[in-house]
Length: 106
Image 1 (tube, rainbow, N blue to C red):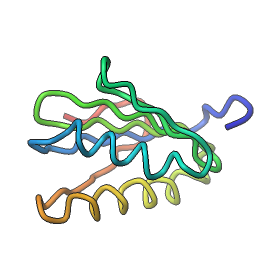
Image 2 (cartoon, rainbow, N blue to C red):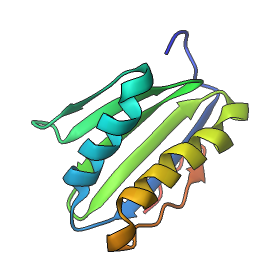
Image 3 (tube, rainbow, N blue to C red):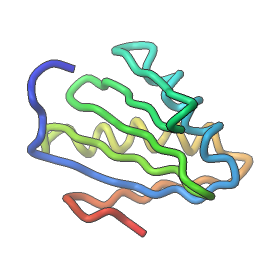
Image 4 (cartoon, rainbow, N blue to C red):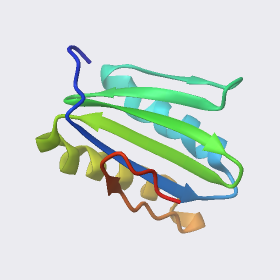
């Protein structure tokens, strides 16, 4: 990702018994194209996406997603990140609900 893209952001908290597994899988898969890295020690990672950046953090029983992008890119990036995670976690019934702006969902 190039430049300082800060005019739009979105957050999601995904409840799961396997947050680290899904975080690592998401970063590995989506990071192939533009870059990304998962750090096991911090249970977190980042993904550069065309038009923005996602950060992924595994908590206790939940996976935290944070997107920063140009406002016009947020719907597309929410769809890409959410759709992939839901597909990876289909068996576990994962769902992703995005909240725009600075408020972090609970």
